[in-house]
Image 1 (cartoon, rainbow, N blue to C red):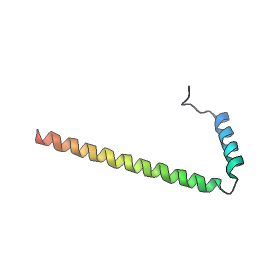
Image 2: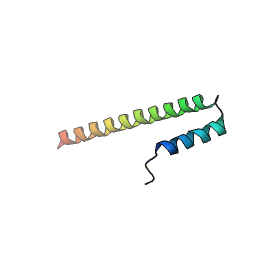
Image 3: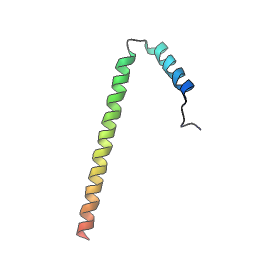
Image 4: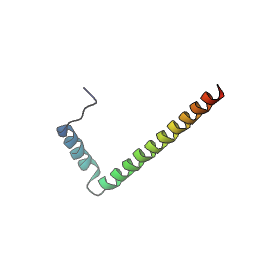
Length: 62
């Protein structure tokens, strides 16, 4: 119910953001959000690699 955002909701959110931040600030905000998401993905990938390596080492010891 809450996890699904449709087209009308997305348009409403973008219109509100445009009113609050203005057209000059929106590209900068979008880039910042994109960088944050990219860094989060890289961190989760590194963590999952570390965990899988630790599991592999544990299996070798047994």
